[in-house]
Length: 264
Length: 283
Image (cartoon, rainbow over all chains, first blue to last red; front, side, top):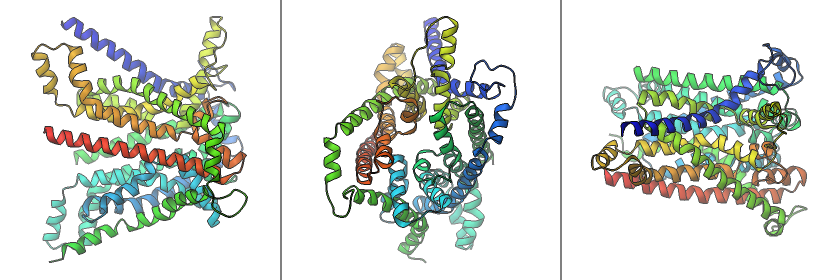
């Protein structure tokens, strides 16, 4: 009996390992290729070099679109934090009529297909004559990231005992002091987490940017997308490595922040 | 003593900037395409023309069928792959689970372009698999720019989305249930089919609906990994907007897409309400 049980376990573990391999292996292969020194895609890569990364910095347009992506992601992250954190506070602490409906409305960009949002914003920006390329992207990305900030900050708020805030109020602290000295410090880990995720989502966003971006304002993913359609260029392997590194750094950062918060 | 209604309004007001932002840059534009979808392409006046044309062109009907086929296929494939992973994760100790979860979270947070590009490198005509096959003297197999490529790309993207809701519903099950059944003499398989699987169905359904909504609106993966015949709603919107330059048609397709997503989302919230009521009753 014991024997058969462990046999079952091993089979399950094997299947799960295969599935996880399917999720991870393609990206790992691309990372390996990005450090090869040939200008063609070969695996296993021959030699070791940073040639493809050098090409990324030398070729026209890659660096400038990366800067644009960084600027857009930074600006939209700040914007959605300013909008989303107070909104999360209202939705978790407030008891007012229409609260559920408001929550549904503020989170709905998660469920509406991005192609539809993209088309809607394209038509809207054209009609109101908003032609500033960077502003279009910041506004569009903020729509896509706002729900994630509200969800993450809201989850953080739900873990803060309202009794702490009440105790401070009873002891004579003003509303602003309670917010500044009690709620915000306790909420900081969630704010950092949601900010990191908002940055990553904005930095990787393709579909909405592809519709909304003006030709001279191509973000890194948009440039990547149009480039992949032309040819499977090895430079893209180097970019993939850098993007994956960014994802991993942000995931690790989030995990560290959460761990810190739990031990504090 | 402050009056309770006043406090409520003050807290509600914190959501005002976000609500204003969403009204002006989300609700307004969406109503804009609803209005646009009733416009004539050549001038003024409201008409049902765009919808009438859409439902009579063979192109739209074929695309609708393809989208449905790919979406349902993606739900099935990702369910098939995600369930064992979720089951495996649920059986681990919390420490190990956190460790293994990273292996699901990293692909979840990897850019969809990176994933698509990696699959192109792997599956392409002169890609790595075909390079390996050539070493054994096997002629290249076409795995890209066809339905196979789309399905591989979609499942790879969607599996993590399916793992999380199933894992949640598996973890919610009290472990005593399985132990009780084992004591009463039920075998592993019987415990799984009679207890674990049925109790995880809310997670399965929630995950499936979520994945279905996501795949209805897909754009990048079919565009990059699919062939000429794998055009879905997302690509059709782009086609009407950029190639034909017909805003009413593009808007009508987008409106139908949003309406379908809303319908599925309502179904999803109904099921989640139902399942949370169930767990409240049992506790």
